[in-house]
Amino acid sequence: MKRSEILLMLLQVPIDFLMLVLAGFSAYSLRFSDWAIALKPVIFGISLWGFLNVVGIFAVVWIFIFALLGLYSVNPNRRFAKDLAKVISACFVGLSVVALYIVLSGTLFDSRFLIVSSWIFAMVYVIFGRFLVRGLKSILYRLGFGLRRVVVIGSESISKIIVDTLQNNKRLGYKIIKVYDNYDKKISKELESLNLNEIIFVNPRANEEETLQLKYFCDRNHIVFKYSADVFSTYSTNMTVFTLAGIPIVELRKTSLDGWGRISKRIFDIIMSVIILIIISPITLLTSLIILLETGRPIIYKNERVGIRGRKFFTLKFRSMYQQDCTGSQFVKSGEEAEKKEKELINKNNSKKGPIYKIENDPRVTPFGKFIRRVSIDELPQFFNVLKGEMSIVGPRPHQPREVEKYADKYPDVFVLKPGITGLSQISGRSDLSFEEEMKLDIFYIEKWSLYLDIIIFIKTPFIIFRKRKVL
Image 1 (cartoon, rainbow, N blue to C red):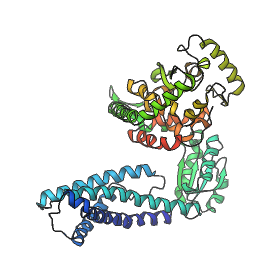
Image 2: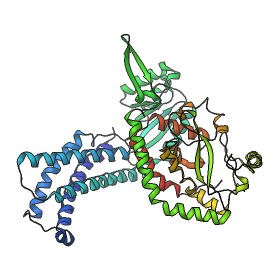
Image 3: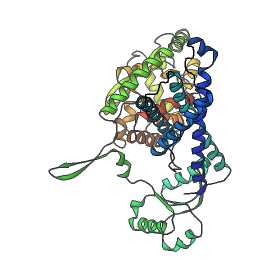
Image 4: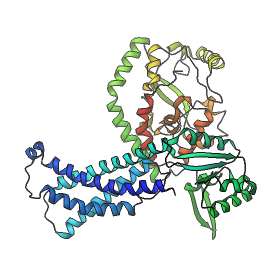
């Protein structure tokens, strides 16, 4: 572990303490503000200094709780989102400790407002403090300080992906020293002279003896050894072991979404869809009116897609093309001719390789249709698909049956979950991703699903849709 990472971890402790004391000060100041006093007069007699003394004592207790819950573990690969979740959990535990102390000690403290507001401020300030430390770490990495010196060994395509990612993202804290196609004892001396912190070995299952030799080398030289996951390791988080006739049996599940997970995801979908539909109702009404005035009816376009377990359904979208150019059973008169025109455009202007097509500079799109596609307003009616249970807010994107026929055998895992309005691939590159990249991200989401991941993707989506996107 690098000294800089340990120092930043140690720096986090006094910053957390300062944030907790500041939370108490903010809560006390808020309670004695004019509007709060007008709302309810102050009937307790504790001074600011006396209150901060109490806050300081409990701040030490909270720091201890933070440590027990792993908030001070040195893990350079931990994401900020996980830190955020741990901070919230730790603050809940801290609040419980305060409440338990008040009950057991019989302390008469007639200001629940101070306790609750201190707790809320504590969550906000501690998260902000951690954001500051991460920002400092990112600045140091970009300036070249504290970078982990790493060698990548492997000739597979994933090796190039890892190298490119680490070289193009200094904030990750890595410095690529050298890349080797494979490991043997001949390069051991050279590796020893490079003063390495880590070695990343790609696809170790291709050569297990080579992997073990490199692992021993890293152990002897106190170098962190990392390797790419093999086919079974990718399922390890969804692996269950049970006995059958006294024999241990391992079951590899495609996703952790099961049982209560499916129930919680469905509850999240329903609640958020209702809230969003209420919030966006002015936008949907205005969009409907403009489409009606621009090109008439129908306003909603139904497009057949493939969902969970290969079931077909109709996604709902605001119509962004001229009526005569719309395909599907909804447009009986122009449907066949529109499909013929679409095939010609796919052959001529398709901007994607693989089974999925995207028509560049699509002449069928109306002027207003280009705008609603650019900011994804055309997809807002799909929240009704979510309420019907055909889609989820977060999940793999649904494709047309003719597209699915070309890849269903190769990527069957993407049909394990309900398709989503947004997803990991949408916040990672939208329409600019290749088909293979989109599939990899969707499968990764399926394997690593959690309600927390859904919430993070959901929160990030509005910030992504307003970025410039190709209008196809």
